[in-house]
Length: 215
Image 1 (cartoon, helix red, strand yellow):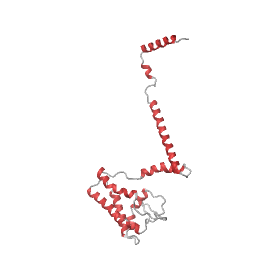
Image 2 (spheres, rainbow, N blue to C red):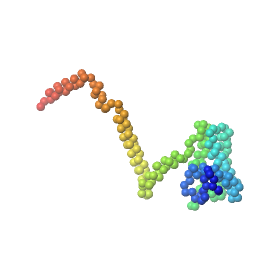
Image 3 (cartoon, rainbow, N blue to C red):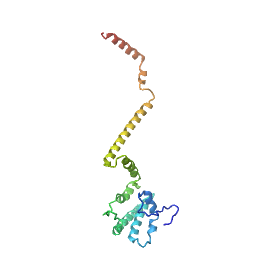
Image 4 (tube, rainbow, N blue to C red):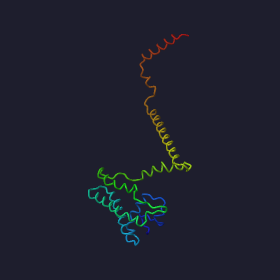
């Protein structure tokens, strides 16, 4: 594939990418269909499956939907499921150790919720994994580096529990500090409102009790 401005190329191939991200998927979606169209080793059902999947992805990004667009959305998803078995037949889902026996992938299963979500809420729900991946980094990857790499799951739970207690204690200290710094008067300002006559009565009672105590 020749290099072009605005298109990301993968000179070493896609199979050698160590960490696949959502941006990589969007980049490949731009030209993968045109790239494989007419290739001698590509089966027609492979093109149909990828074509249907791309149609589904781009239809969901419409700013507004109607009954017709939702029908197109449902049809594209059905066409993908009709042709996805070609990946099994070609051994595309066979890894180095073992092959996957089904397509029970959470992201693929989530596609079935798109149409009902649009009909119920008027728009597509937030199905992006960016938020979960961000918290996965904070809740798993970073605590993992603080462990000894042995029985790390229990250690990660302890680390997260400590972090949560620290956060709660810090929030409590901030609340206490904010409570006292935002007071318009001092904690003892209530004594300023005591009537002078009440003060004289208090002093007289105090003096009387002072002499009534036996030595």
